Amino acid sequence: MVTAPSASLPTTPEEYRQRYLELQRAAQASAARRPAVAADDRNPTALPAELIVAAETIPGGWYWSARLQRGQTLRIVNDDATSGVSALFWNADDTSERYNAGDTVKVQWSAAIGKGCVLLSDMGRVLMSVTEDTSGAHDALLGGSTAASNRQRYGDQPLRNSRDNFILAIAKHGLGRRDIPPCITLFAPVRTDAEGRFAWQQDAVKPGDFVDLRAEMNVLVALSNCPHPLAPSPSWTGAPVRAIVWRSGAPGPHDLCRQRTDEAIRGFDNTDALFRA
Image 1 (cartoon, rainbow, N blue to C red):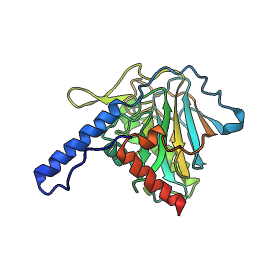
Image 2: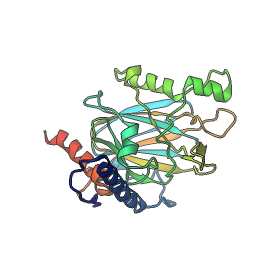
Image 3: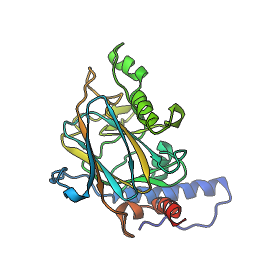
């Protein structure tokens, strides 16, 4: 468990600034201890059959949605190294609570989302935890493709995009355009260069990469299998990905994601309170 530096309550702007820097240093030190992404020699489909709840193949350009129960894990398998799978999440019991990209990055002091990180809601609760990740190449800042980004990138062609896919996906659950917040795009290796510009890390996504996202509450999830706006291919290209839902169980008291930071501990406490009630 990582504990932030103790301090009395700040009273001046400079004291607030110093407190902010202390918290930042503590969080960055914690992030440095996060397990590094390593090659995973497991067959990603080799889960015990009795644990698998559902398995779907999402063709390039298409979408998928499902309701996950607390304690289930969504495994997304990128067999052909396609350049981006955008994802959104809602509290399935109260869809006014949804994924918050800004808080997910801000509270964890990093846009490098990977194993050990959590995906936070706009109510300060944990929607999903990243329990396994062979990629470590995910974009939590730019979001997914739109009709406008497709036109800018590929010209005036009738191509699928993530914004429209999300509209179609959530309509099946009684939601609409106003229910769509900024998303996270998995398998999208976007980083900032020395000038602060967004750049795509070529060859960072490998065939067979997968990520496991554990539901920490009952979650509505929507995926869109469309190329990221910064995908390097000059033409729109897509390949199937697989979504596997399996019963992983709730995290134990010493779970990596639960104990990684003080902020994660508070997020889990807020989430657990829903179920204690």
